[in-house]
Image 1 (cartoon, rainbow, N blue to C red):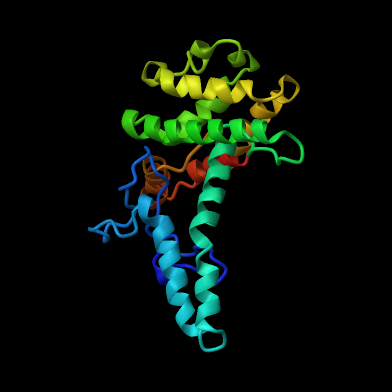
Image 2: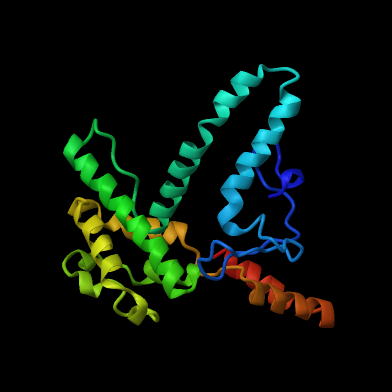
Length: 230
C-alpha cells in the first residue's frame, strides 16, 4: 500500500507483492524488498493515513489546507470503527444496537463485551499462532446455539481446541448470552457469510502456479476458482 498503489478512492490496486496472513502477526510483510517492515500488516492503517497526508499536497491547490487537515483527523476513529465492525462480523456478531432500540445500559454492556472479545481474539491468535483463516473457518463450521449454555463447549471439537484459553471462551460466551435467543441463528449465518473455507495462502498459490509454469496444466487453477465460488 505504498502511495502509488492506492487510488484516490482509497482502493489498493497493485497486487504484485501481496499475501494473506497465515497467522496473526503484525510484523508480517508480503513484499520481499521491504526489509524494514514499512508496509507490514500492522502498519497498513498508518500507511493509508500517510498516503492521505501526501494526497493533501496536490489537493491543496484547489482546497484550503485547513479543511483537508480537519477531514483527516477523522481517519483514526473511522478506521477503528470499521475494523471492529469487520472483526465482529467474522466472529458472527453484529455491532451494538443503537440506543433507540435498547436501553443505554444494555448498549453499554454489549459494546463493552464486544470490545473485550475483540481484544481476547487478537491476543489468542497472536500468542497461539493458530492459523488465522483456519480459526474463523472452523468457528463458522462448528458454531451451534448450544454454546450459550456452556462456555466449555465452545470450539471444544476444533482441531486447535487445546490452544483455546478460558479467557477467550468466557468472553465469547458472554457475548452470546447478551443476544436475544430468537436471533442466535443469525450468528451462524453471519459466520458463514464472512469466513471463507478456502484462503489463498502462499503455499496454495505456489502449488497452482507450479502446475501452470512447469506443465501448462491449468486444471488446479480451474478447480481452485470453482472452490472459491462455492
